[in-house]
Length: 375
Image (cartoon, rainbow, N blue to C red):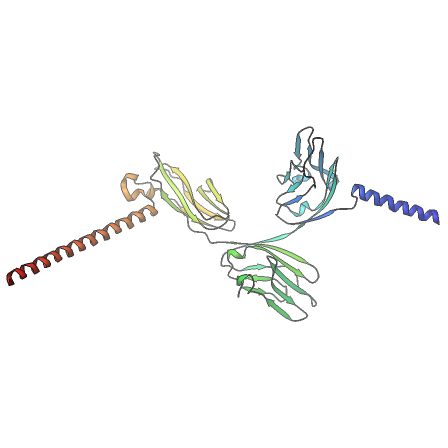
């Protein structure tokens, strides 16, 4: 009996030692939202000259990245495992830490860092996020695709702030629309059957991540993107160009996020320019021949909408730039019209002032003449 007890103690000590030395069954939990980047920190402050570092993924202990200082080699194997890591891995050449960008649920699992100095294990969990996109002013429905149970309590969070909740047992539905400086005031609606949240009259400030938690510990995440309505792009003649062909420019003043301005010939893209989260004037040039019979259009678009202006070559390219206002685009024509109006107003003011000055001089001369006669 005593021998059996000693064997059990030794066995436990053996497993404890293996666990302590090799990190068996000890994984550091790391959580990230789908689409975000995650860094698995090696814990090293610097890599030494004789270091060899390997990163492996749980599926068949697959080698996904390594650093060999002696061979001066840094390699990421992003084509393995059906390319799930392709163009998504970055190795820090100073510390050996691994960063995975644009994460998805395919990246969930166990990661092992193996080196001649350190071993670390990570358990990565990627929370799935449901994407909802709407135009500014429209309503957005965040639907959890579930039903409320009789004992359920549901809480909706935005930017870690409670904005709405349901207590089924208490028969209470509450929206906290005065929080966050009242940005949601009178715009939140809760479905008492499913717990789904609807945001009416959306604005770009509503963009962000939402989280709903059920008492049953079910958690759902949503990413709401609210896109501002797009202006119509303007096509004008580029009179500053010295080209012998018809030089045009498509422009748009945008104060919206994730937009692309493009020239099309029929259904084919000729050129494009994109910006993210900027207030900027976009412009895109195009050279066409005067007798060109192709159909051209300029398109401003974001992920869910677009605005299109079609090019009328016969109107914009019919006159040369020497033909004054006919060569110019709408913006320059308006400027010239305003300047002409200002010149006209200034001329009238000068004429009125001149007439009044002459009249005042005549009146003054008449007064002097009358005084002389009286004397």
